[in-house]
Length: 632
Image (cartoon, rainbow, N blue to C red):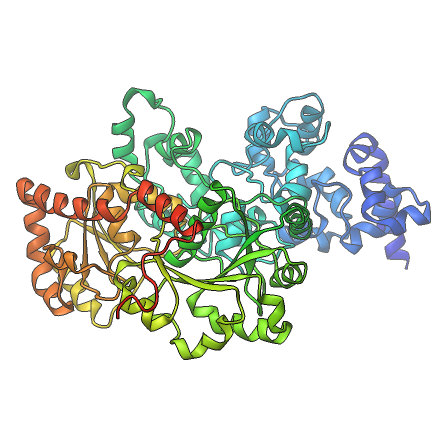
């Protein structure tokens, strides 16, 4: 007891000697609000923190984390000193950091001061002088971007820590909070993404932004540097000044050349692309939190009376099926329809998709059930693969008469996954009408209408040749892009390529944000898709001036694609012909242009926004391509 009393006495003496600094770093009102028990005790927060709070792990100030400080600097607990006292007497002068997002050395250098960096930082903030507290937190950029959300007098860093991170606000142009959370689902909602990246994410090779590959950058530019050095900090402070490549796909040199004099020499191409919104990432914004955001969307939907309800998958992923759903939702809305997205029953419902640009908030499946009971649903649109799930839930929830006024539309995105008629025939008769929209021409025929027993309208995923820029092949990067799909035996093809094309980088798409992929694919010379064949990888490579390769897939590809020299009959043919074909395309400009135009002309007829929109308009008016019985 005597030892404890002496320790408290020493701390009290130290605090009295630094009373002004203590008043600065023990925020009385904040401490009371954070710890109601202290307010109830009517104890002076400074005294409470000294005698109890510091040893209980409580924080005296938004920018002083007791637990972080004591853990980061093991000598603090063993000294017996209160963490704040230690910081005021020893830590600040030694360059110790009081918070994960506050770098004392960085701030002291920027301010040019030998005084306590945290106190100097707070004084400057009160006087309107914004200084970034860490290389990965840009105070001025944050204040400019989110200024309307920041209360008067609150420092941007404090706002980010307690509000911004939870709302998905970004602390820096090159750190995407929503992307980091979406890609690394193991990070709990209570964890600040930037703090996680600084403390361990960078060491683990996690990417802070769609346009920055941590492991690739470290391997290419940081050989010989300590493993604890943060690659993003290195890029911002060193790499960006010499046009280092932040991601193997990003066309640093090519993009600067294309922009010419409009791009300042002292601005890195990635930063310029983001600043000019040539490359932009947009996700649905949260209103306070997910629960409040859902409530707000519910209030909007409460005014709808003829809802087109779309069921979507409970996985934040990028796929042609999800893109198809979102494009139909958006285009029908343009036609004046009341479109609403609902998550599937079972599992964790999804509120928003964050890996491609969109503004949709998704309501829980229970809201669809409620809307049906209130007779506010006009049409239910359901992906073919989950039709049996919908049947089970609606059969349990409703009697036949309750569905009589509703139309059912099956979103047939993959003919191989479409259930046979006997699975759903009795169920669909409960609805006023049952129809089908298909994503590919190959299963949009009179025979298919007969097979599935419903009228069919072919509406592909929204994609249009005139939304892309065709770039000269010779200006592109020597990259062979691979779709994430796998095909049995495809490794043989890849081994052959690696031995034949030493000057090319072969990159398999994985974990990319769609907008980053879409931006970069225009600078990739070749792409091989091992999936459906006629997919985004094939189409978007062609629309941007590259050459794509695939094995012919009769389920998804029109027969006219068999005539393309870059579409093979099988994997064995691809293995035998692909290396020499790629070499010919690389060296023979005339032949390359001929092959490109063959592909472009064919796909242009299939993917044209004016045709897409007319098809959707026809569908909304009840006009179909094929009706059951038309084959007789």
